[in-house]
Image (cartoon, rainbow, N blue to C red; front, side, top):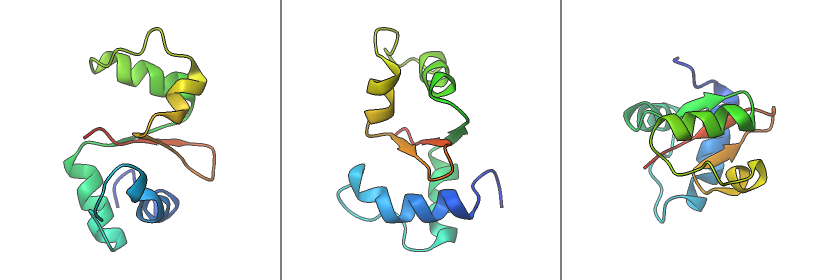
Length: 87
């Protein structure tokens, strides 16, 4: 597998409805393919998430780290990492 380990894929499968109206994946393999296709990334900290979003053109400079964490495209993984899924 790529950068998306079991923790990430399982969490995304269980929580994808907060970002999408319909399921985009039903298996870990489908989840991995979807995340690769939309160029999702895993970040180690909220500051890294903010830097990533800023570098990719999102207007986040005036957002607090708490606001970044609450954004629908940012998934807080159980192990403390962050999955960023831009659609």
